[in-house]
Image 1: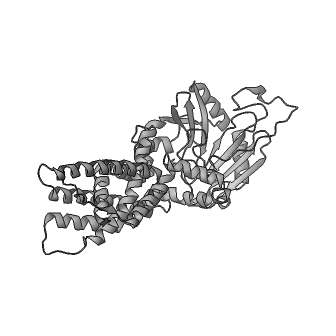
Image 2: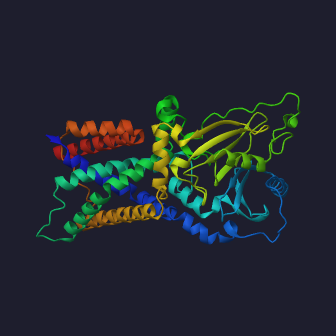
Image 3: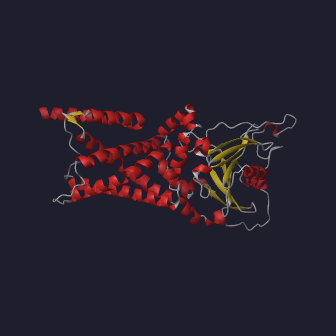
Length: 449
């Protein structure tokens, strides 16, 4: 006997049961992250908008030197040049991986500093993506939950119509009511949840790397390599599609001793000042806000970028405004510029997809829609749990019973396709198949006794 409904029901149940805690965590932290700009504008008002008591004006380059002197052991990672009324932000880091944000007012005087690890946005992001723990296993676990969510969307739609769960019944038991509400909410949010999960996958540990590799090997689709997760290098505020782009080299004047080979190229002899790079950038049509990354070595370049998914309050721009420009550190010459129009289809898709996922692609309406979807998703989980509790017999797990029979060919093909597209899901299916085989043999032995 060929089976489709029963195996799907069992898989749907077990998936929902085991990943529900993780899905609730992802939903709640996702809601928290949706409004991070609103929250941070209030709780960090002084850091973002206030002025230092020192009213004397100094150049931005002098401010950078002052920061280097005050924060010994730290190096400059990037400078975020913000649009009014935000204060500029300098990100510094040390060899232990610790980062701090230093805020500068309009006089380039220090206003305040923050430990980057404990800012609201970074805590929400870290919890959402890696449960504040990090590590490959946790990242894979979060990605696995996303994969199973996609499966549950498809299987839930099938089970809803196959079981007539939407049909009103004269037997209005608590189980039937909760199952119906679970099905209704699932159908309403099926497409939005699928889009949200799909646009979050590029950040994932395994599939994200596969997307990155494919885009790197197929320039027509990716143009530039995509990063699988937010990088830990100096470039983590670059637009998605240009973070791995190989930077051009500055042409060093052989008749001048530019910095003599030292590893620190900030303020090297003959190097353009930050003020000059800002001025050149604006003449090139790069308006605030944007980020500047110093050259990595004596042959490196100044990298100036605008991104739609920086994760920094006040720094995000619309996807079509994304740009990354490279300037010779000695002459200030524009050595290359990559705009949104230059991206391949993958780069363009994720330039829109990531801010859509984060809730700032089209302002407040985007946040409200994502909020509604997350709340409805949580509601669906609750009603699903309640329907199980109402059906559950005391002292038993009350999982859907296994009906002996072979999987239907259509179901088998669907599972194989999903397993190929989502390798972690495929690997977990193999584990499920092994467990099911063991249970089948165990039940068979018991039935023959």
